[in-house]
Every structure is written in C-alpha cells, then in structure tokens.
Image (cartoon, rainbow, N blue to C red):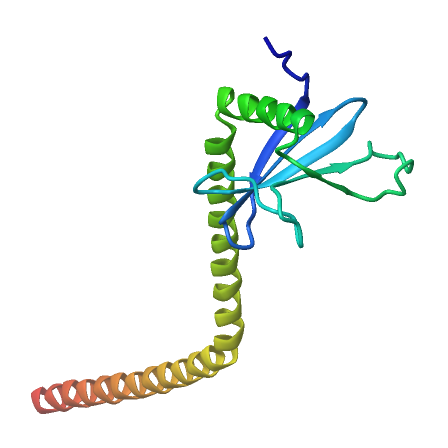
Length: 173
C-alpha cells in the first residue's frame, strides 16, 4: 500500500477575476508552498503557461531564498507529485473546501456589489446635491411668498370683519 504524503495548511479559494478557476495550495517538506489552478467545473489541473502537462507550482518557504525565490513548475502527474496532489484532493474533499471557497467567493462578490451600490448612491447624492439645493431654495421662496400672501389675506379679512362690526355698532347707536 502506498504511503500517503503528509501535507499541511491546505487551502482553496475561487479566482475572482473570472470565477472559472480555483486556487488550491498546501505546504509540504519543511514549508515549501505548492499550488495548482483547477477548473472550477471539472477540477482538472490547469497546464502552466507554455507547458504540456498539468502543472504543480512549488515556491520556497516564506523567507527562504535558496531557490532564488523562483517558482518551480512541476508535472503534477509524475509519481511523487501525483501523491502530493492526491493528498491535497483528499484534504479538500474531506473538509468540503471547494464548497466553502465558493461560498466565500459569493459572499465577497456580494460585498463588492453592495460597496459599488453604496458608492453609486453617494455619487448620485453628490451630483444631485446642487440641484436639490436650488429646488429647496425655490420651495422655501414659494412657501415664504405663500405665507406672506396668506398673512396679507388674513389681515385684509380681519380688517373687513372689524370694519363691518364697527359699521353695525355705529348703526345701532
């Protein structure tokens, strides 16, 4: 029976630029960081740029420059690499990481849509602000003019009422 490779820190996330790929990564052998790009529909490992094989990328441990900081592009189907990939897929499946990554991507997408909507509302308010101020000024002026006319009419009515009362009182004297 083949020995399973011991990997750690398995993680997966949806690639947000188009959502058609997933990034899956893990650490192995003293902190070397490995990752693959997966088709989100088939989970097939993508070929690296210019490569004719499914590509497993290997980066040195964080802070280590012994590989010149360069990423090695490995054939994911070769014996030892295939064992690492199989161990990664076992962890991904047993922890339901693909579904979690898709949920996180959806939540992030929704958050970004809400932010864009909020920014748009602020923009509309800022654009509408000067126009709204002018409309409010016109309404205030109209209301003031209406109130002035109403007060004038009330005064005229009061004067007429008073005059007619005094006219009646004068006739009764």
